[in-house]
Length: 560
Ligand code: AMP
Image (tube, rainbow, N blue to C red; front, side):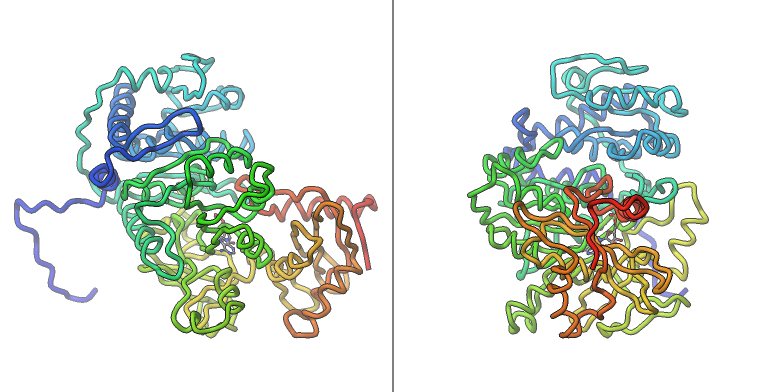
């Protein structure tokens, strides 16, 4: 350690720990009357919101929740969830955002592993909760969340119904100061192999993440995304990485927020129109659903700025959204990273270049945001050049990365091997500072001694006018090790076979974008591509499906 000059604070100095409560306090100073909206069910002002957070804190305390306890939520995106994102950590407890799209068995695993003590359950999930209730080892109490009029449900040790309890509680709560390194939130990775792993974030981490995210969303002129007059509606679930942390940013700035409940593309479009939404974030598959929604046909979405992350953004989707008036900006992050790591920024050099080049950069994973360090690492742990060419694993350092996996020290040590957080993504870093994600390490297709990026192939295939959706995976091949296989959903009334796809890809081979082994010799035409619990391509399921089809000689298949 360097011997720097550290001056001890005066005896009566106040250090103002970086606590989530400080984010809540500023929003209402800016805008008391701005609204927080939940579907067509509820709308109230920031003044009421602050009172409701205090009421919820009183309800939880009366139910026996103490600092250090874990309180879990099973809900769709709602004003209630937002209230929980503040009240639970602000009383010193830990918010566990349950991924309600996992299997019942995995949900049970996460609840026992996280040691949930009290669970807030949306009435829609009561049957799910009942199916695991007898095997829960730590839960002592439940609380009912409902959009309807019911005041009770068949939930064990039910404290009561949310709205009634809030109505009966005091709107005053003196939120204490405590150590900023206290854990505020926890949730589980959506990994498709093995048990989900618990990540966790402290107050300090979330506050720093919020400040950095606000500065990036509001200050980069080339992609100015979120200012105080915007209207925010999340379209990535609040249970997954705090809806990318943006509810904390929006609340800090007093921005109007619209919560859409369960994602129904028709309702999303209606809310966008009615509430004049200008800013959202989502994964590519959800955007595709919004673009296809009946309610949106013929509508001009001009003025809607959307961050796309969670999966690669391909050029076809970027152009399709642009043609409908939507400004897309790519960003990158993961469960382990809170999540914000990088976001597109078009700098002076790129501004002087061509529109085509700018698009190429807008759809990459972006430039690491302030306070984030990104590097490319070889298998031997050495850092590799950031020359836009050399591929290796993307590794990260930042003040808001999970410091391990909850109660799994060995997996945590693997995540942090060599003192950098390992993303499991193969990437390059270039001169403009951009991260270009080539693939997940486990999804790279190893064919004839070459590494082939499934993401790049998906991007090129998606440019075929007949293709609506595409997933590419490597499948075992006795001669080449692996060969690429493409799963396609075609646009209505269109047709394409393996030969047609080859014709489409040939020019990219001739121009040197891909080598000739990248052309899939077999494809499958399907009506739907399997997705994970957060709407990403489920490549593990896809590989299993393909193996089955190949064994049974399925009619979906088309070969060269
Ligand atoms: P998760 O932890 O489920 O949020 O998944 C994180 C993973 O999503 C990353 O490790 C990447 O593989 C992928 N991902 C996220 N953002 C992007 C992006 N902009 N481009 C490509 N892949 C992305």
